[in-house]
Length: 394
Image (cartoon, rainbow, N blue to C red; front, side, top):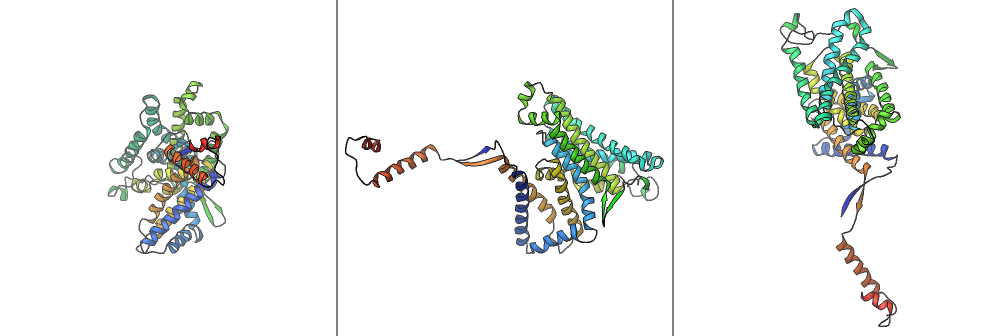
């Protein structure tokens, strides 16, 4: 009989070895798939590394691709730590992009770079309000947040498309080429989020913001009463309620925090990358869903989300750069799926230990066999009627 037993005191080394081993196992599985398709896995991986890190300008492009993923990874990790499965990071990201771009378009020319903090606030507020919908339904009506947050992703995507393709709104360009081909209105150049330069690498402002936010979220969950309540509620909600913890309020707070982080990612996408609301570019990116992969591989640790987002950004960047007839189609998406699969599998072994236990019937047979072997191997047969003779017979 094989069963899983929850680890009472998990070793700290598991926090590092499990994600690393999961990632390596995903690479091995990916190499097998590449080889089975007739391609050289070593060449494919070397090209990914070259286009992601070593070639000129590759690492800067990787950091740019990792910036939105950093926020959606933090959003998923913040919610999942309480056992709240916010699958709506995608929609909250879209709403953050909508609200932040509106602020940039409305006040950008008058405020210039001073509008950047307002864009960040607007993105956080938009994402938090969108996440509050499934949060309230979960808190007061016990509705599955998985279903409601997932459905709201499609509502947010449709709203974004409607603003650009079906109205003459603030977000849409209503002159020139915009009259014939619907497209978003570009923000004033003074509102573009700045880049800092470390050697030859250009680091986007949003990446620095995301790194600081990751540290703050880690402190929030590890050093504050709020984080303590989140841990207690996730482990034993009835005990938390009995102790007087306000589970509904904490749930709403966690959902608001998660949605705000995703919305801030939407603001970063507008300020750092696109500088306009672009539904056709945002929807295929799947930032929200990739954030779930990042949170799982980081084991819900906000600090670990930073390097993992760089890794996933490298894969996305390499996929775009290498796309062509000589590169295995769908390799990047396949690797992301394998990473998620092995990360979740590794999480099982990190939380539980495998126990192999014999069934009572098998144990009885083994015991009788041991007794028979012991009897046959005895050097001197005990006299009839002696205590040892009775025990063997029994």
